View 1: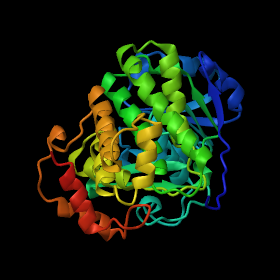
View 2: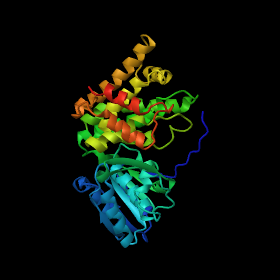
View 3: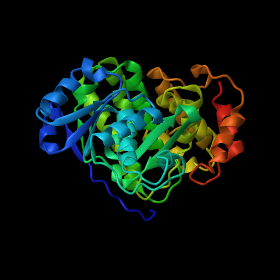
View 4: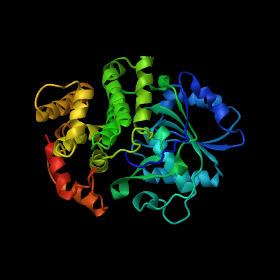
Length: 385
């Protein structure tokens, strides 16, 4: 097991009717910027619950944060926050709203140049306005981590940053807020959580049986609950387990002391930036292709995955690995997710451009740092369809 430090200060408030706890989580002397997305919180009653819980609080609202939160939109929120002396941010929505709010929190306090440098140049975040979240779409795990991904359309970029200053102070997780989600968003969330786990698990062995079994438990639970989660939106137990799986997938606990490989995410971000496909869809396409391409170096973990997640015990090692990848693809298909670029209406073409964009940022991917420009092209060819 590798050396590690684990720190996670986020208070989780989980369960039915927990939005009312906001009044016990935010001091009344705070001036709050309430952030949200396209308006679904008005239709599903979450907005009314939030405003009711915060009756008498000083609140400024900022809506319209997009899926794949857009830099130009977030900068408008930064200006509003500064002009109104905001000292607490409350993000109400899914991972995009939360990610965007984390950037706002950091950018408000950023005084060392262009705030985009936080993402583009890794400029250090020295402070941030505190924030809390009310999660309405399980997927990214952003409600319990210090990561954020931001897009900038004018530069055709989707980049990430991390800082301990943007850990939420608290996150409220009420599974009932997910009942009205469109099927596509739920499927995206299931895949996002699934691949978060595999990118911390399907690497190489460093003698971490606890973390491995924790990862397997999340994967097996997602596979088990996915059909009912999709088919019956008001099944509280399924939605509760889905929500907690997504949070556990990227709150740092299964990543302690293990090798990690975020190749699928890095290539997926490029596909989203260039072609506008959903983040979850980029992962359902790319992740299995990465495993096929890297099967030699991931062999031990892929065999473990085959046996402990998919109950595959018959056949040669190669047959077991093929079967595990095929079963994963079938699982993604069963919830109507694309598994090839063709499924996403992306025709084989200038894959070298995607590889070049990653290379220009100095990215060498894979847990063994063995995925460079040529390998990215090969992975994209595998999943071209």
